[in-house]
Image (tube, rainbow, N blue to C red; front, side, top):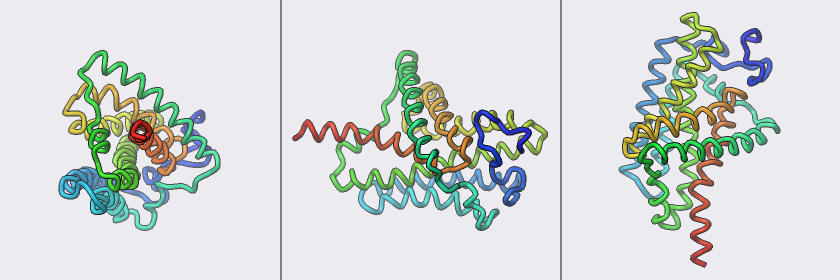
Length: 251
């Protein structure tokens, strides 16, 4: 691994799990099933959100989303499903802040581009949250943290699957990482099509670069907590700041 490690990006003596048989191997066919569980998890998330849009039961959608994907991975890896996560280091908290800032810069740049070129559609979650009850506003931030962990799994599991398939086919590790990152980021963009009223230009142009930035912390640290942390801070501020300003105006 050390010979092919991306020295300017990756940490020494650490590598992605599973693709090279460490800590346990996951075969190509098993990865197909894991990726299928990603699709199933997203479908269940969507259906449960329709069934339980408000109240404490709305947590079920996010919990099921995560549980389906991690449960399927655990079928093939046993207790080693935890290889997706690392213990947080002091520097990891700084990385969350740095990548949050970088993500906002990329988000703003991509936003200007899609507004200029495409009929950009806002995320309707903002309006829904603004009209929600006070309880549901509080619940939103809790369940969104769980859902965002699910969105990281939705990205990282296909990333690792494509990485495994490409390396097994003889593609160099570095090239495989780049291709896998692009594929995983495209999947992330496409599952957001319903959110943005099936605006392909908006999703592909705006969300693929943003997702690549959010994926970089995982590639760097091999720690899903870090990329999830960036994602949570990003989305909580996106949805929380308007509520805070609205509350101040109301006072």
